[in-house]
View 1 (spheres, helix red, strand yellow):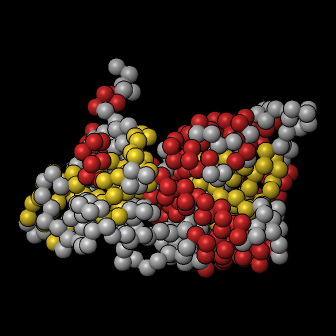
View 2 (spheres, helix red, strand yellow):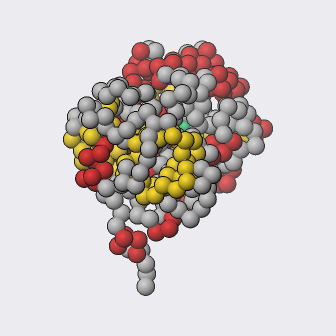
View 3 (cartoon, rainbow, N blue to C red):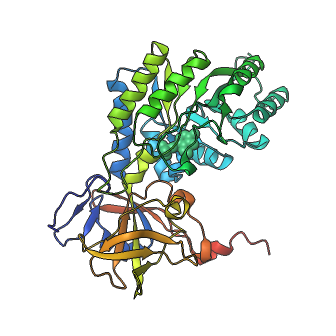
Length: 432
Ligand code: PLP
């Protein structure tokens, strides 16, 4: 493969092969990064995150929508440095637990720009959101309505500074019975979903929310699924929402898909997606009201790559290339057969069919089933691109493997924003 190549869009913006034929991310040589920081490691191009955030915001502005807000779904990459960057870019933040709420507040998101989600919010989570005065609580079910009513009656909101009765703004999450073409495990908009109110119950839910003192029902939320590569399901969701009444706020969730493989078709661009959502909302409602979207993957997946070191190569029926990470740093292949590509970081363009396997005690711990690598050997650094979403987020300590660091790269400088876990960290919570 020629050097100094601009790589496919699967890689972070600005990635290239340098004149040594080594992958550079954020201007940093990945072989040097592996040497300096060890592997496995999550490597993130800071400028990539920033430019995607700006592209989302600019797309709303270019579509002429004055009250359009981009809410980062923090579950995609709940790392303080990432959250701080998005907070500084003016995004809002979607949190789905007390932990994510804590991370978002700690990273500097104003409470008014935080949207609380969850299909099983505890009383403590709701109380803490009310006390913090988050911008929106997205109500998922009738038990949550009971819980909110009880908390409000108990004075969880207190009174406003001016002495007036305080109100918590809420949206009702509904399942519009729209199915996007994605894996069933990340499809959420169908009628039989664990999330939100089904169409038949939505009327009752809205009526109850409207009656509760201390709640201000502002609108509707729908998130139909993740890794969606077509725009029509988003339009269909908007057409369904308007049937439930016209409200001043709509949150159409996240879900824009990304490219994991160079040969995969180009997903809709950020501009096409935002344009389509705004047009669909306008068409359904006949004008602009407050509109929120909650991208996760589309903001962070392609900004990150994972570096591994090859530990062993074995030939039986297949050629097994085993690396020093796996399902502890990237659960997605195990969870939904997610496809990734892999390359030897200083010898791109390999042709040997290999199975890139993790180090964990499960046969299913395979990172890439059909990798093409150039003569992989122990000690080689292997890179898997597009791991900036739902990798770090779902990392775990299976087999007592410490979780990898997160390294931000920009203009040739690398900085550790999350350190590697140590062996001592593994016993840190022991109570004996
Ligand atoms: N909003 C909600 C309510 C979600 O459940 C999710 C993902 O699970 C997202 C946003 C983010 O989805 P994506 O990363 O596909 O954009």
